[in-house]
Each structure stands twice: as structure tokens, then as C-alpha cells.
Length: 259
Image 1 (cartoon, rainbow, N blue to C red):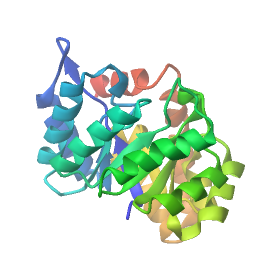
Image 2 (cartoon, rainbow, N blue to C red):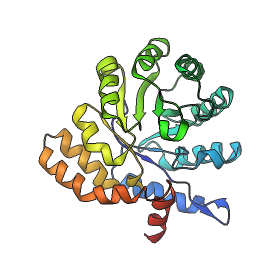
Image 3 (spheres, rainbow, N blue to C red):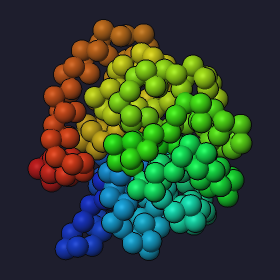
Image 4 (spheres, helix red, strand yellow):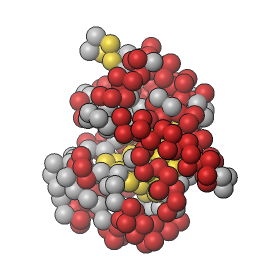
């Protein structure tokens, strides 16, 4: 269901308010760039610093602007299970194609707590859910065995954005979960290796800037044109690194402002 390139959208601001005029241009550039979907209010969208009202309105606006031309996966995760249920239910009501659920940051629950957290959220909605495993931001790693157990409890969990940076762990997740779970790269600079081990795409920061190039890497790989895919990947790899010379989303928003 969720394969290809999904852009982790920035949230544009002007005079300390969300700039919805700028958002219109961003959405059009993404659709024209050929991405498969957009992900509003994830980490790149600065979700931890948006109010509930801003968070929900932004999702509504993105759904309306996209108008079913590509998929919309809304970031609705939280370290509070109740808050995540609230945001996920609201996003479902607005017409998203799925929700992205980040590990509960700061709390650092054990594996059984992670399973209970995600199971509760997934069972509160009917749209598909994507897990977001990013220990560097959240302080906790959701392990492959636990992911497999969760899939048996919540069938609408269909994918994972993997941002551990650990290819071995990703391979173990694919080995255990197989076709029951689509694995997407959470790091642009690991896109090609993740495709090589069986990943199906990326939730990308850099595609805010270069949507057609990121999409072409995935398309070429899927067409069996591995050499061409690799050449383009290495061409943009320095820019992938540049997107993280400061904490995300500082560099990507600076780049977009220059553009």
C-alpha cells in the first residue's frame, strides 16, 4: 500500500504563523515532482512545537490541497497514548490515507509498553498505520521481535519508517515480518542500501528540495537499472549529508528558502 517516495513535509512559517500560501506552492511542487505521497506534521514538520489546533488544521489543509492526487500520511504520534489516539482519530476524520506513529519519546517504555501503546492507537482507527522507529530522537528502539508480535495484534499496521541506521536490524525486521510489513527508509543517505535489502521506498527529507530525483532513484532501482540508480544516488549523497549538518529541519528549510 505504501511504497515509493513520501515527502516528510516541512511546515512553512511567516511572522510566527503557519504560511498556508507557501504550503500551496510546496504541495504543487511535490505533486509535479512525482512523489507517491506526503507526510505532514512529522518530525520535519516540527510537530512537537505545534499546538493541537495548528496540528489538526495543517492536516486538514494538506488533505484539501492534495485532493487525492497523492497519498497523505499524517504524523499523529505522541508520547501520550491518549493524545496520539486523539490526533489519529481526527486525521482519519479529515480523510488521510494513513497515520505515522513515532515511538513514545522521553518516556522510554519497555518493549511490552511500546506494543501496548501502538496497539491501542491502531485499534482506535480503521485507516492504515505506519510505525516510526527513530531511537536517536526518542531514546527507545522498537525491536523486530516486538514488531512481529504487534502485527499479530493490530492488522492495520502495515509499514514502518526505519530510522535506526542499523541495516542489520532492518534485515531482521524484513526476515521476520516478510510481506506483512512494508519497510521504508527513514534516512535519505541509506535509501539505496535499504532498497537492496528489500525496503520499498523512503519517507524523505531531501525530497522537499529534489522530489523528482528521489523518485527516480527508486523507479530506476525497481526497473532493474541498478547502475543508473546507484549513479544518481551517489550524485545527491553529498546533499543528503548536508541536510543534517544541523538538526533537521534547519538545513532543509534554509535550502527551500534559498530556492
